[in-house]
Image (cartoon, rainbow, N blue to C red; front, side, top):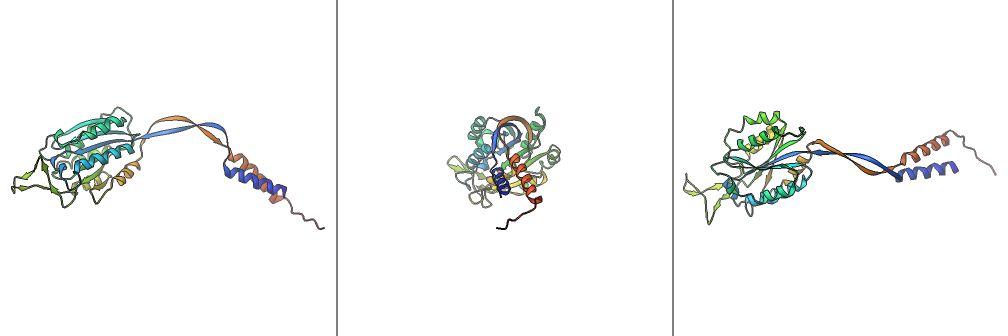
Length: 275
């Protein structure tokens, strides 16, 4: 009884996981490089998503950026041309400031050339002097209108560089007119108010061809959380390590002793005393 009581108590102590003293533990830090490519063509002012497509995008991207505070994030703006609004940075304050300032007047608006921001992101990733990361992504935010076909040749270059495109389609299939001041934009072909609708074909194609994924944002469909989860699953490269002090768990000492006593209990013969 003494033997069995002893190893039973030792098993309970081991299960509790007693910590005695401290030890140093190495924590590896992983990082990702992410470019946000934001469509600033006039159609992003459409109001099929309240208060407008662009205003909703700005709100959602600020929250998205906070989810990757430990990663480098850059900002590319585009319409018929593309510009780096913010280079890859860990500085959340600078990034948030640039997102706040997004508006359709920042870039020339003569259609939407999707090849321009992809070429820009590819060039910046290639010229990066830091060690190559395992995860390089572009979050492409657009309503998908007027892409043309000139973006298809760059897909093989993106794949060779290991860059994935995660597309975020903004808008609805019903669409809406595009405000301009107190009026709306007129379609010169019909002389009627222009209607901007979400076009998903090219956005889905880009994502599929680069092993990324397609998501949507509207008043009915809100897949920002799914987008964050998809990027979070991408494995980043080890960018550094640090030593932290952690409590030293000594449960195994008690476990080994308890197992030894249990083994003795098994081999000892059981004797009974008759009174």
